[in-house]
Length: 141
Image 1: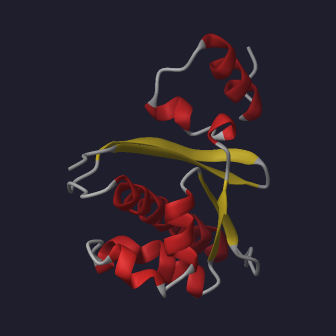
Image 2 (image 1 turned 120 degrees about the horizontal axis):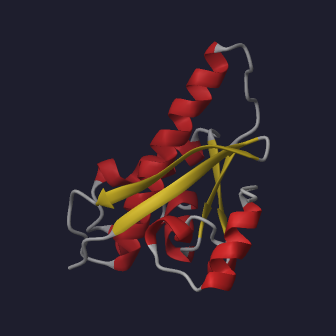
């Protein structure tokens, strides 16, 4: 069983507007893939909140928001509702990301671990990798 830590960053028009290191996830997962799906579902909730806030300001987003994950399994579960046999142990509430993908609110993409900027929120990184990621989120000192 795995209890994981997750974190994420939300960008609008290439600008970082929200970020957070989530504490330990509230439930214990039976697989790494389940934990990745839970993290993607938590991130999708944040994205939907931001989309709703921006919509109330008069900027209706017609295209799906991009959700990046370095988990191919989580992406497969978000995209494909037929994978039920491989995901019987994953609770319905943890598949919120799938609902939003099917509704056209989100589109999930796979990102290589070396380019996963949100790792800087949950992992200790080597100096060069930290500086690279810091540059990608436009923080310059």
